[in-house]
Length: 202
Image 1: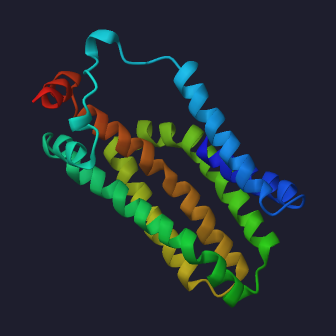
Image 2: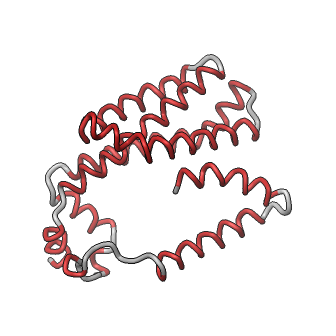
């Protein structure tokens, strides 16, 4: 869903922004509100009632999350992988428009096309390729393979002397998306509902 938003967002934002520069912000706010209301009223709870822990404000904070990560063997390391991958991705998102403008003379249209291609590629890989990769390589193998592809993709983006090679690096990044779902799978296998409930009640 997030990648579908990356595909559709630039197109919708461009169309609405042509009407008024503030319009995309109002539309984004309205969609966020609609999403929250839909989640609150229409989306059913997927966890069986007997496995739910009571909500406590004392656990609804960053310290409670860190306690959970430290309470299960290997969980903190897997979370650290997600943090580092997200850190690298957000760094790329923050500078790539300036970098491509400086190096290749790209403008808004080129950047919009790249964002749409990345979003569509990530959507395909995570919805179709990630499961196949985990079945072939195992979850651990899919995580490692995805991380290696990610390193190669970022190196290609930074060193690419031509637009074609830059696009090749961007497509490599799409294939690195096999690591995220596999990492989440490994994390869920390390957490038992009873232990989470007991930790929350401490």
